[in-house]
Image (cartoon, rainbow, N blue to C red; front, side):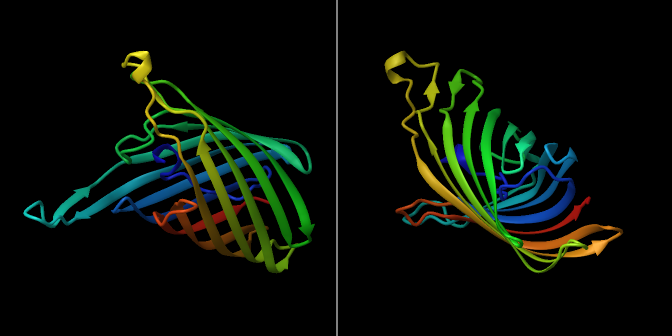
Length: 259
């Protein structure tokens, strides 16, 4: 499930909003430990439209490998990397309860060894205000990849659900505690193809189904008639429904909301 998991943030389903975010991320995936800086922002001139970007810079990655039986022992591999994956997109929300997200993923530079293809995505989503302090969200995702070097990754589908819950919340000052939970299930609906091969041998046998999840805990403060949040999050960045293989991400971020 290489193309579905990397430094892609799993965010709750939200309508257009304006904010600036800066954070740090520690990640374990495929026996590689890494650290990233994350910068993101969104600008919404109205409640029905916004543009956003999400960028991460990999500071380093560290791999420790041990092999036995007269083979390699205690191999140490230290990488100092660069720009990781980047995301650009727009949200359209013509109704108060539903909208659509169009996004574009740019391949990383030296910050990642996976996800080397441009990806175009569309995600219809819906929001339901369950109570004054709880919002439920759901989205359906479709992703297609651009062919490069005669290699065509297969298209992917996904479904995402989220819960945003506010505790001891002051609606006038936009301050208090906020908890977000996100669950994402994604699968490849067609095999990738190596177009350099003859047609009977092009299929790459890389179909998969997998899930990811994330939990955020944040406290927001009223600042200059806007709001500043400090948050901690944990993310399972790789998972299988009937297997034990997982990856883990832990992060801190500051998020300034423009009200």
